[in-house]
Length: 475
Image (cartoon, rainbow, N blue to C red; front, top):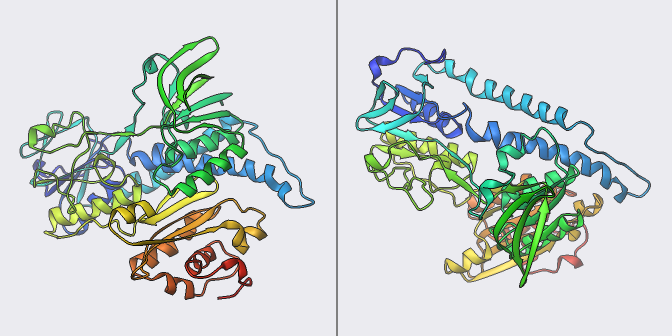
């Protein structure tokens, strides 16, 4: 037990939360706020994935890479020249680590003493048993449990991968020496973000993926992102398969099949970005009747309850959305339902998602394919960024906006945006979906001029107008 733990309450608690990351803290704080006595049980570093090895360190490094790109791309403005490079990689990594440790202390460790109803335990691995949670020789007795142990990076099952130099997302962000070349396996949001970041740091980057970049994004956005990456010197092999790898004095070589041709690609190391594995091993879940899916994730209902009615789960350890804000949201619902007899239900119908590439990519609601699969009669609108005045003024027209609506009712169903300020702009569309706006209503809404978010208005108007024939501020 460490300094954060108060009395152990004779080992009896109203709720035990296993995992002290974003989801775990959200659950513990919510339950304590409802008068419950909570045992918060550590699982890995306090703060979890986001602050330690995920969102915070990756976005800090991505921002640094954007600064390099911003200087180098200044020549897009006539009469301006600029340049930047990585001068001291170790110093950059150290500054990232200092940011992480500061936030871990301020936003997690220092918060624990503020909650008298929460006792923190980090004495070792936890195992869920009948009647509570076993930590070494200590039994935390509780009628309700929330599992929030998160996930970890996983490497793809390629022959020889265990015998060559590989990096997962955590290891990549902790490199002490900047590599000369990397091959990224996987073109999802983690792979895309980190591949672009490393390329801008001066690394020779190659991406191989089975389908396309960001397979969950609209096809138009995937194509545009691929073109943008290639413009920045990234080599991309989409629609490829890979079956073996080896290492020798020249580096790591991976064998792929691409467009009917067998190729051998070599780099200093492989960066495996093909997914994450839920942290469910060793918890004894099978012994207490908790069902797992084929990935090993805990299957939960809309009330965040597992197949064992006394055990709930939230965050990356579940079969739900893998975003830190959804982990905290789901954990809050789990706590309300577990200790406050609530009937809260998980709702991701207006859930935004963001990929921090450059341009940024963000979306909410249904894609065109998802809307058609759901049975809607769909209409779509696509506006390239060269029709958005903000992009023209910034001399940066990379990207587009796509909206999806119900043809019968005109109700907005979803949308995606690829733009330098896409992450901030998407929230307007989130609110539009949340409150059931139609495309016509969005198109008639007043937006500030020379903003990226104004592109949403233009996209809404494009359902029945030709925006190329509108003046700058025409509504």
